[in-house]
Length: 331
Image (cartoon, rainbow, N blue to C red; front, side, top):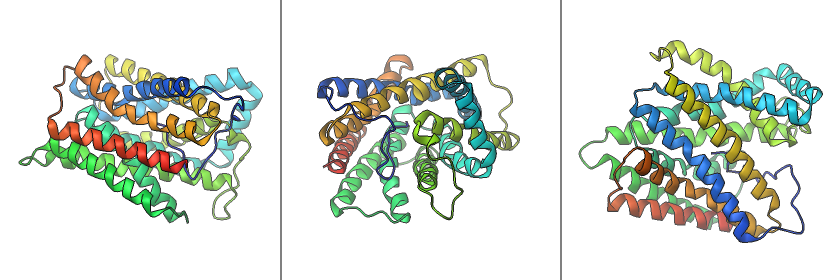
């Protein structure tokens, strides 16, 4: 879920010049895709058990703040963590804004969609975030080759087929409530992250945040997660969520651990080990495996049925478009 880079952002950990084999990097990337896919499967499982989408979303970020706070304190030291908290206290309006958009609105919509569409449909539709990123970057002055937009249209075509296969021709309810929220979420995620990227580069219309501190990716995720907490607190009275079940408490904890910690760590590690553009593209392309892993997970654990022919063709087109997009990005 965190596998997309914005505005050519470079990981803080330097690449190992001796390099790591392509196959090994792709296996690490696939492992990251597997753990990222648990988000879609577990969210769908909680929905099928009548768990409210609010708790599926909000609890993840409460867990993330705790897990990352402990991790940063232990791995970087108490002094470093106090510095992180100082950054939050100085610029809390900015972190609240970017965290609300990039983490709050994004994940609330994703969990809401899980009530109306299978996890593999949500996972496939979520791949539109790579297209949404183009529009977000263009709004911030980015320029792209015309061929990029062609690959984007291929991805969109695949996603449309997947959603039509789920909705059918007579019932548009799953399309509107299962697909449209994910489409909006696909724009929220890169927008929130891009605001942080712009602030790191000292844009005069944004606060002067501690750019050196944010060289650590997990610090950035912690600050955005903490920034989303006011959103979750204010959203609760607007829902009929009640109290979370014990199953939701466990499953959202697993999502935070598997997707927020393990998958992110594996993906960033693989990216940092890539010593040329081809390897970097290969690692990024492995994240399209989330769709296949989510589908397999639903069939194995939730007894979902195999998609129809239109759905399978849509998945194939989406993945091919993503691979072409990523390979071109790193040429």
